[in-house]
Amino acid sequence: MTNNPNWQPSASLEALQRRAQLLAEIRRFFEHRGVLEVNTPILSAAAPTAPYLQSFHTTFELAGQSQTRYLHTSPEFAMKRLLAAGSGAIYQLSPVFRNGELGRQHSPEFFMLEWYRPAFSLTELMTEVDILMQQVAATAPAVVYSYAELFEQFLQLDVHQVETDMLKHTALQRIPALTADWQTDRDGWLEILMSEVIEPQLSQLNRPVLVTEFPPSQAQLAKIAINAAGQSVAMRFELYAGGMELANGYDELCDAAELRQRFEWDNQTRQQQGKPQMPIDENLLAAMQSGLPACCGVALGIDRLMMLSLAKDNINQVRSIAFTES
Amino acid sequence: MASYSTNEFKAGLKFMLDGDPCSIIENEFVKPGKGQAFNRVKFRNLKTGRVNERTFKTNETVESADVVEVELEYSYSDGEFWHFMDPNTFEQYAADANAITDSKDWLKEQYLYTVTLWNGAPLLVTPPNFVNLEVVDTDPGVRGDTSGGGGKPAKLETGAVVRVPLFIEIGEILRVDTRSAAYVERAKKE
Image (cartoon, rainbow over all chains, first blue to last red; front, side, top):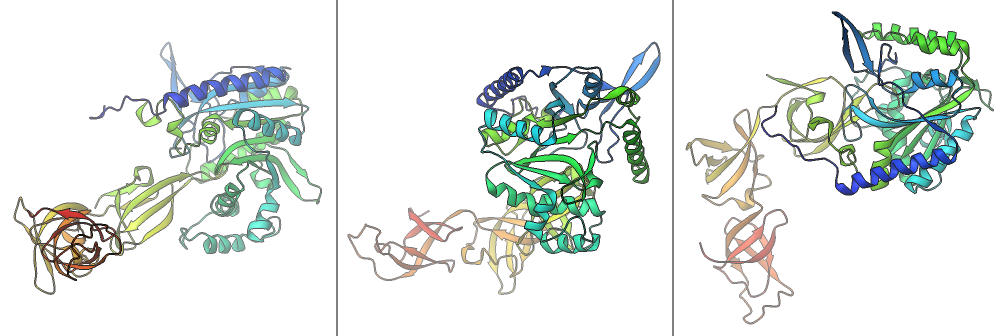
């Protein structure tokens, strides 16, 4: 109990009305396209293993026994079980939870739109994301860049060849706020160059930017494939707009054995970093084993879409009640 | 000395960086892609007044800086130090030339100033946004000209020189904005 309780909503009535309208428009968009709305559980006995993703957890108690349950960081695993059972195209609007992420663009509880398209190519899904953005948020048509093109254009670096030392040198030179003792790995340098040097320039374009063909080390749950230039790339895209990262999409990895290996590698990384290892989702792996149809999927942050649509710079201005006052 | 973790960072927090006391202006949590999070912090170095940016790894800690702001009354200068007094406790503080860089043209006895103390010693003296000061020197006034057009320089009792309308005369009290050194209006004698 604080001494000065702040009970007032953090969003204006206008923002709440716009939010309701936006959700209705999204539901109409998917209804028109024959995509089924689903609701999957928020609590799960398993959790994602990604080292920099921190799940909230709680305790399920029954007859003196207690078990850990994790709040989902996205509805991905459960939705893939529906896909494996033959659901066809599905979407979900749901609160999701990520511990330790609090800031102007981050709320530990936020609202996500996630959808899956069996038989879609990644390009087809990117097009659908672009159309959705234009329809519900009146954005300009998106432009598409590959990860390599961005590093070539803004940093004159060949992302497939460049040495890690050169990435570090470039980061220290281009980002004055970084100190010389900053330590990270290759992906860490790539990510900081992306967020501190490239992203600010993308936001100058005043239109959404779809970035695709990520380095294979950043594949997460996406397929790895060989692109037209013969380079190994992750079949992933991210959507940037208004200086924010709005969406993350995959050509979904459907190989259960490879997925298990990625989960195990993640848990090894967690162990090295002194972080708790996460229980692997055996239900997801079993579903994939039985056959996940080839599909592409994307998660889009509704709060950030609202921020973009209403030109707000703090996530609390579009969420009814701020996390810190909830 | 207490320390702060990045999750306690917020505007106004005073911390030590490279031996200097600093104040956070803006703290931004950044999570690039699915990678490791960090904080991008914009801060003012309270010793130099400069604004800078620095990145901190999430969960990194910084030492707190013993910095407080107090309202003190200006007493006098002995040429080397500028002496202030707490009007409630009568405690005396001596500010050096660095601390009064931005305020030395606006120091008037018995006026209250915001003084930033670091480890109990004045680090920075900030004048109030508006002060009433007497004109000690200016060209003779042009009677009847209240247009305010043109203007002329006038020296105030604290040493500041501001641009004033032509009708202003020596001995008048002016209300002045110290941030822009701009004349606001004529004020009544106190």
